[in-house]
Amino acid sequence: MKQKLFIIFLLPILGLNAQNKAQELWIKNSPEIRMNIKDTPFEFRWRPIDQMIMPDYYFGKHSLIRTDIMIGVNVWKFKIFNYTKLDEFNRYWTGARIDLNLDFFNKKLLVNLQGRYFFGLNKKSSDHYYQVQYIRYVTTDKIHLGILSYGKTNTDEGFNEGEWFIGPSFFYKFPLNISFHVALTRNVFGSYQNMLFVRLGYKFKV
Image (cartoon, rainbow, N blue to C red; front, side):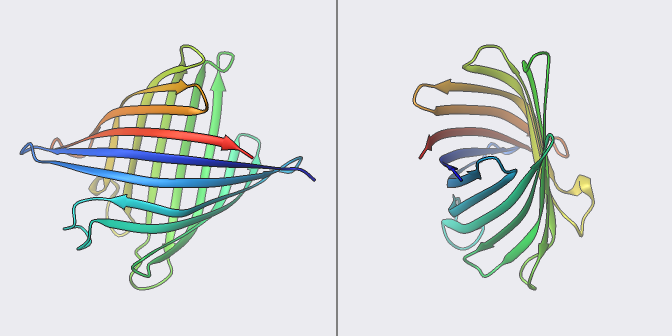
């Protein structure tokens, strides 16, 4: 039985711009190993080091390191994962990630919807959920134009008390499996916060 192994390097850069014009720069280093077993619907993903570099007043240090493990199955247009993550502060979560991938107009319009719900496994770890929506139009094989939205909410607060950013996005595919994705987004639950999302990705198959 043949297997396909992909290693994907993602380096998003998140720039936060508050109302008082103060800015923050967050950098995320997140290599992801994906393994697909041929002729089966099963998929395995592992992010051995998911590192977020940020101002030290968040955690008393300049970075936060986490490890993610996802075990999933493909059903029709859905990908359903058991998603477990842990960080260096001994916080542990497990839960479900569900992706729905749709395409229209001869695969010119692509729609990706994601929901992730995490249960905290100890007192340090609070329950929370994410939502991600990425809609894009394939103008050429290399250029995609679209809308990106994403947010996080803790389960002990109302949906509109969380953060949900939305805005236009631009994706460009370079040769050698290198990609560039940028989006300028705004928090819909407050006028005080914008976020510039920049991601450089590299994928290779072994």
